[in-house]
Image: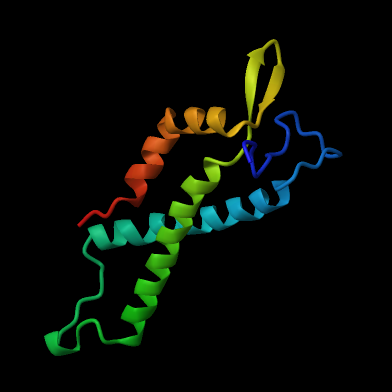
Length: 131
């Protein structure tokens, strides 16, 4: 297939127009926002030194909360990686001026638009490990 997998809602807000994958995108965006809120809360707390420390080195990494935290962080990372993949397959509306928009849904144009955007650079740096 050379066409987009997902189509966003029109920029002018027509409610009677349904595009393939737009319901999925709406739910996906909520999941991405939840992941971003998690990162926005957890990362500053860790940077400020509020990360839980183990008193007994022999017990480090063996607690249930450590495993849960690692699974949550792995899921958050997976959400961000999948978001990059989905954005490379999501159509977009190009503003042609005068309040007119053109739907762009061929994959080559979608990928070129996303990969050359500042959004891709931010997304890429967001998934790189800090340590």
